Structures are given as C-alpha cells and as structure tokens.
Image 1: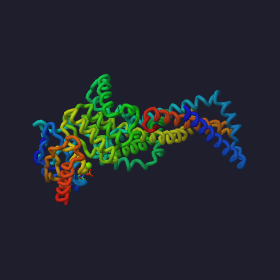
Image 2: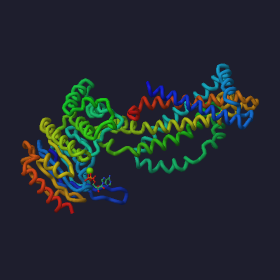
Image 3: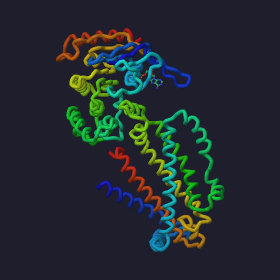
Image 4: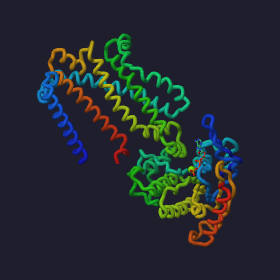
Length: 249
Length: 249
Ligand SMILES: Nc1ncnc2c1ncn2[C@@H]1O[C@H](COP(=O)(O)OP(=O)(O)OP(=O)(O)O)[C@@H](O)[C@H]1O
Ligand SMILES: [Mg+2]
C-alpha cells in the first residue's frame, strides 16, 4: 500500500542541520497493523509526517499504491501526538472539518458523524469546545474526525501517551475494534512497549537519532482474545524490550 | 443573563467610584477648571441634546472609519507576514525602522497634501494604528501551534482553507486586542487633530468651551468623549463574544 524506498530526512534551519531519519526501507501491506517504537527524539513523528505526505524525503521516495506521494492522500488519515484539535471549533465542528473540506453536504455529514459519535460515546460532548474535554475524550474526537473520512490507512502518532493507564488500555481496545470494523491498515507510533505489542501485528524498532529501522518483529498472536493476559504477550514484550535496549544506544 | 446583570452592576459601581474620586479631587483642588461631577453631568445632559450630539456623532464616525480601514489593511498583511517567514525577513526591518517614528509629527505634511478635512484626519490615524495592528497580528500568526496547521493540512486543506479554518480564528483574539488598543489611540489622535482649524468633533467642542472659559461645558465634552470610548469598547467586547465564543466557556 505504502512503500518507503531508502528514505532519508534532514532538517535544515539556516546553517544547522539535523539528521532525523536515515535510509528507511519499509513496506506497509494492506490490512496489517504496524507499531513503530523507538527512543524519544529518534524521528518517529517525522516518519509519520513523511507517510502522511506532510513532509518530503531529502533522499529516496515514498509511493502510495505505486504512485509518488506528493501531498496528503485522501485515503490516509492522521492522528497527532497532541490530538491536533482546533480550540476554536466545537467537538462537532472539529469532527466535521474533514468532510466539510471534501464538500460533503451537511445532511450526509450529520448522518456519518452521528454514527461515529455513537460508536465512540461522544454524543453528549457535541457542543463543547476541546478545552472542556478530558484527554481521553479529546483523543476520541480526533479518532472520530479521522474515521469520518473512512480512511484506508490510519496513521497515529503516540495517540495515547498523555492518558492515564486505564483510559489508555480502554482506548487501545477501542482502536483495535475500530481498525477491524473499518478494515483499516494502521500505523501506530508509540514509546510504550506494551502498547506496541498489544496493537502491532508487526513491530518496527527504530534506533536512537538518526532513526534507522533496526528490526521488524512479527507478532502473530496480536488481536487474539485476552492477549494482554497471556504469557506469549509478556514474552513478546521482553523480546521487544531487549531489542530496544540493544539498539537505542 | 445573570452574568450580564453582574456586569452591569460592576460597571455601575466602578462609575460611581470614579465620580466619588472626582468629587473628592474637585473639593480638594477648588479650581474652576475641575468642576464637581454633578454640575458637569447637568451641563452634559443639557447640552448633549442641543449641540453636543452632533460633535459626538462626527467624531465617532471618524474613529470608526479609521479603525475599520486600519484593520482592513493591517490584519491581512500581518497574517500573511506571520505565515511567510521569508517575506517577513525582508519586511520586518522596514517595520522596525518606521514603527518608532512619531507619525503625529507628519501631521503638517498630511494636512498640506490632503487639506484639513476628514480625509487627512483619517489618514493620520490609520498611519499610526496600522503599525500596532500589523505587528500584533503578525506575532499571533507566527505563534500558531504547528499541530493545528498540520492536522488540517492532513485533511487535505488548501492554503486558503488553512487561513479560513486555522490562521484567522487562531489570531482573532489578538486582533481584538489590537483593535482595542488602536481604538484608544485613535480617539486620542482624533482629539488632537480636531483641536485646530476644524469646526466640528468632540476635540473642537472641548477646546472651544475651554477658550470661552466655560468649564462645565468643557467637562460635558470630556464626559462625551469618555462615553464614546466606553461605548466603542463595549461594542468590541460584544463582537469578541460573538466571534470568539470558545474564549468564554
Ligand atoms: N522542524 C524541525 N527542524 C529541525 N529539527 C527538527 C524539526 N522537527 C524535528 N526535528 C528534530 O528531528 C529529530 C526527530 O524529531 P521527531 O519529532 O520526529 O522525533 P520523535 O521520535 O517523534 O520524538 P518524540 O518521541 O519526542 O515524539 C529530533 O531530534 C528533533 O529535534
Ligand atoms: Mg513525536
């Protein structure tokens, strides 16, 4: 679906330049769920922005279904690290924005959003502003906005890192359920090993800056019932942990 | 409704307090140039329906037109400069070189070129408030969180849509602040330009009463110009509540 061919990214601010990502080769296959994990500042957000078409590689190329990705693709939706909600729009207006920009008419927007809001238990928050929501609610609004566009590829940048443990686990379930129901391909960036193992069928490990892909681990048992309580889950977590320890130096 | 009541009561109490201070000061100074509030108010209510209202309206018209033109020119430029760092790098030095020039010193030049009518008064005011507005607006546009812009870009927004949904609403509170400051400036400058070679406006009224040593009438004019500022401030407040509802949750 999405192919990254020896992608490198260098930020230049005047004379200073930062090597953010080096020689990333990566293939996103339709229907799979990926988790990208790596130490702080290794370029995870940059990688997600590249996949979204918001940034362009300094070297290498990114192909979406075989065609070069030059701007955000309408089949891809993004959830940002800090939610990316607009403080001046109500919950409803925030969630409706994507559809509105696609010139979907009001009636249909209403129809789509009502379903998504019910699914995410947001119905009572419709008229509030983001400042009046809890972190978990904000995150669900961001999800609602992404889902309303019926994306084929859902990119998430540490969507749950600001939440408390219980809300976090609860939203992990919600995300898993939605990925299945909407049959989306998904890429989740996280710095939590547990989260990566719980959500990723494939776990990608990035090195410290500049980020490189050090390992891609298969996680075949992901998504099975009660995975979080199984020993295989805990074994996978320690496997990822030891790899991270090796590569994050 | 309740908070409106509270606000009215607060304003009333503040006005009462000011009148009491004024009265104490007048009693202490015993100078005819500072009459006590009651005679001044009586003079105001006597003279306002006769002639003062006309000067009041003319000055208000000049202030409003200047403020409107100032905003209409400086806000779009400020927003654009704030979003185009390369252009800003060129324009900023020009702004900082011309900002500190006391433009009021150009008054004779402007009067000589545009004659002593409404036009030259308005041009002078616009020239002065332009800088306050453009600098405030530009700074606001520069400080918009990147996430707000990126999240809307990821929805496929065009540059125009980014302005409409992100940049303009994000800067609106600061634009209102700039308008409030400029309103105060505009009233002061207008007062000055109306003080000579003019036969209408509150500045003219006050100076003319002064030249006749009619202090109660002069104070009626001062009350009128204060009232003008207060009413225009209230209108800006009302507009801000109307257009920035998310600030009042
Ligand atoms: N606009 C920019 N200009 C210059 N350097 C940048 C820019 N954005 C990011 N960087 C640098 O690139 C590196 C990677 O940043 P990025 O935000 O992608 O990391 P991250 O893995 O998402 O970090 P975190 O875990 O803190 O979210 C960092 O060292 C950062 O300082
Ligand atoms: Mg990040």
